[in-house]
Length: 203
Image 1 (tube, rainbow, N blue to C red):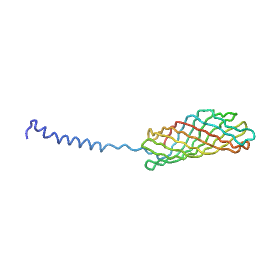
Image 2 (cartoon, rainbow, N blue to C red):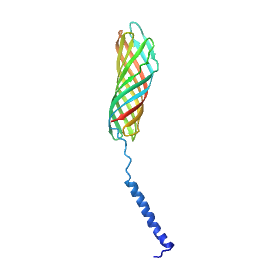
Image 3 (cartoon, one colour):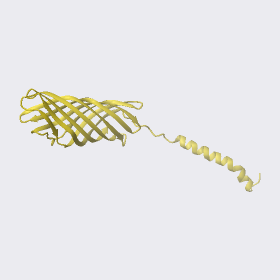
Image 4 (cartoon, rainbow, N blue to C red):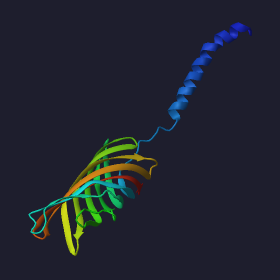
């Protein structure tokens, strides 16, 4: 075998094959990107605003009508737990929502906090989680010296993004309807919608 150009031509194809094989082996040995793990406990804070709120009083001895709730800022804190099975994620959460400047007409004020006990079911695509919410809610309002305590349901939806293995940012929309029958022999229905951004820490 000569040392001229023919030698490099003859060695060219084996060298290309070796280089390609080495590159493929290198890629195979690289650690694969791990999918996000949504299992576990978490806690966090939320902030946002109330909207579409109203209080409806019916069968009252002294007053009847529907009173809108002024939009107000909200903040809250929550604790929850999630379980993941493939792409399906489910769990539960308790949240306390504060809207201290929420005011209905007719001197009716929403009192803090609103308490939500939520069941959550969602679908995860790696670090994104879209979920629905269904649960129970308790609200409290005052009319002068009288307390208006209501209980009912909460429904909604949310979207989370896992920034790191422990830090999660998201947004959530909830609508609530709670009923009280303790106020001046009246049926009192409090409706409260909120939209909030959330920051969670996964333990």
